[in-house]
Structure formats: C-alpha cells, structure tokens
Image (cartoon, rainbow, N blue to C red):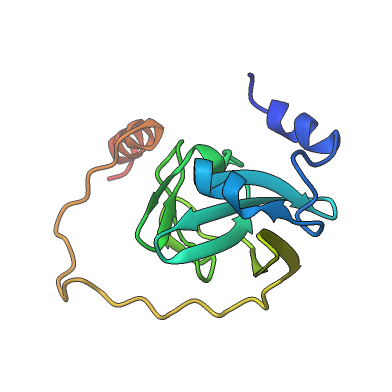
Length: 156
C-alpha cells in the first residue's frame, strides 16, 4: 500500500456489518474487536473487561486501522505510531494524535449489540504537567534535526 491508498479505500464505502441492525454478541466476544459501519462511517466495536464500546475505526493522525491496535484498560493504541485514545470518551491521550476519535452509543438486546448514534463530543480533560521543570535540552530525532543544525550555522 502506498501513501494515499487508504483515502481511495474509504471512497469505496464502509466495510463490515451495519451495526444499526445489530451483530451477535457471541461474534464480538469471540474476536474482541469488529469493524462495521453506522451509515457511511466505519466503526470499531471493542469488547473489553470494562464492557462494549464503539469508536471511530481509524486513527485521527494518519488514518491507521485501529482494529489492528492494542486495547489496554480503558485505552486503544494505534498500531502505527502508538497514539492512544480513551475508549470511553474518544479523547486523544498521547501524541502524535491531537484530535479525538468519535464514540457511539452502544445497546444490547436479544443477544445482539446495536450501535445507533454518536455520543456528544466531550471537552478534553485539562492536562497536568508531570513536573514543574522546563527541560534544559531537547533532542530532535528525524528530519527536523538537520534543519535546526543548518539554521544555527547561518545564525550569529
């Protein structure tokens, strides 16, 4: 897959079952995660020890498939860059993602799980610093480091 292919795939329409029609709880319990759709949006169902949750199926950073991610406690980690999202609120808990993923209301009846509508967006919790100190040095790894070095050479 080359860069940009994922956008072409999205134009083909959502994949998986229509979650508004329901899916058997036994199917989700068997695999833990399942991609389906609500209208034209792909949704990821997650069965964790905390319950069943429905969130956006793609990372807000580079559109990675979150079905391939790791669920730990109340968070979902992106398989590409390890962004971290709260599965209850959708909040981006760890960079590089800055934007939240969508969350949907989940219901259960007659052995099926139904997803109907999105939760209202919740304002992110204020971030608290882990330390009151500002670092003296910062290391930049990647393409930006060369730019910093070359700009210092031309700056008095």
